[in-house]
Image (tube, rainbow, N blue to C red):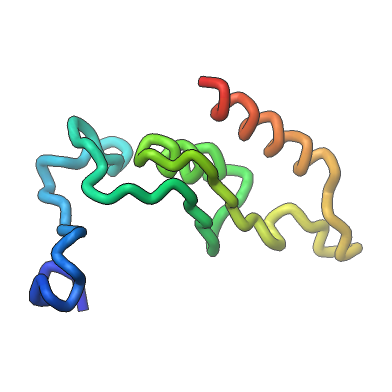
Length: 102
């Protein structure tokens, strides 16, 4: 059930669904809004891969996070060896460092 169909008491009244006018069409990111809830630590998980890592982490930072712990899981594991790919880790670390300083 989508949160907009739940009574405010069910979801605490602190969060609300976004109106389509509050999203940037190209990215789906929130624009021209202050976060309505203060959450300093985001721990996104599921479906995070090198090709969307920057967007996921960047969106968390834009939403006001001071700490982001993205779970990349097997998207940086070589399926033939089961080993983590060091170059992928280094690339993601570089993206995270750049986002943290921008």
